[in-house]
Image (tube, rainbow, N blue to C red; front, side, top):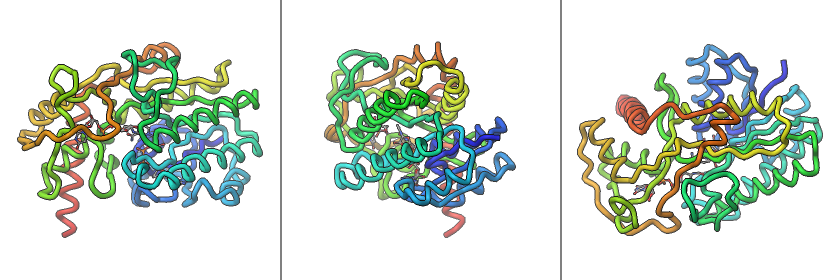
Length: 342
Ligand code: NAD
Ligand code: WQD
């Protein structure tokens, strides 16, 4: 049986997608350099699925190692998650981000060409739209001005993939532009575990309930929105990972060799709406403060998901309440584990 290579498969989205693929009886191999995850995620994947995928601790910029993995395995498709993803860190260390994310995809494509691997699914981001002129955003809208070096690496990667597809007619790529993923697997064995102080909204909210060091701040209440706070399209991690299965099942028979799909719910929520719903679910009162707008943030974005609904036959099933319940339950579990270790 041909295998699916998952880069960054021990990370947040990669681990959830790996679980779904294993549950569907696909054979997978995982590559991760563990720069933003822990090896015990592999054990958790095993606990959920009773299957242990082959794992390589490998950096995707390492051509020699990658070559060896491609040579040893009969690979049908690459699902490429491995990248650095912190917006703020990318502002601090732009070269590190360009090297890891751009050199990484180039090295992978070099191996795909060498070993005739012709199916590729890429983790892109809604950040490529920059500040959208019209809402909801659809896939035919042009790239916006990137608000960070991280965003630039996603635009550049999409451009590299488009060129590669134009040159290699048998090579097919699907870029999935994720909106804002939230939540954890229903087993509570894998979830989002940001290292250090989190940047993203939901991890910041849930962790602030337990930490005296993290004071929760709402960045900006002077946007031109219903309550003055910024609006985003949050998507449950289980819906998001399912989109990769649909993309894989679609790519094998598709005629087009380059496709882009938005992966969101199509509905925007303000920061205050997220907080209010979280307070109801958890019974916790967040003593949040309003702070200045965060540099690089935009007022509002949400997806037009018509294309993914129609072509991939994919549609988000979970709503914001489901996402926050899931994120809260994961936080309760990881927090009690940490306490038990002390
Ligand atoms: P993550 O950091 O949890 O997972 C990425 C994994 O890739 C990590 O386990 C990390 O150790 C690994 N990795 C990084 N560089 C590597 C390298 N050079 N070689 C091998 N492994 C490497 O991030 P995530 O949230 O799971 O994101 C997965 C992908 O989705 C990324 O490409 C990210 O840019 C993209 N994305 C994420 C979000 C989000 O909000 N989480 C939104 C849009 C797009
Ligand atoms: C959401 C809203 C914040 C934290 C980022 C990346 C994007 C994509 C998804 C990878 C914003 C506000 C946040 C806090 C707050 N990732 N907020 N207090 O910025 O929409 O998107 O993750 O591709 O590229 O930029 O997500 O969760 O950081 O912020 O008020 O402590 O919550 O200002 O309005 P964002 P986020």
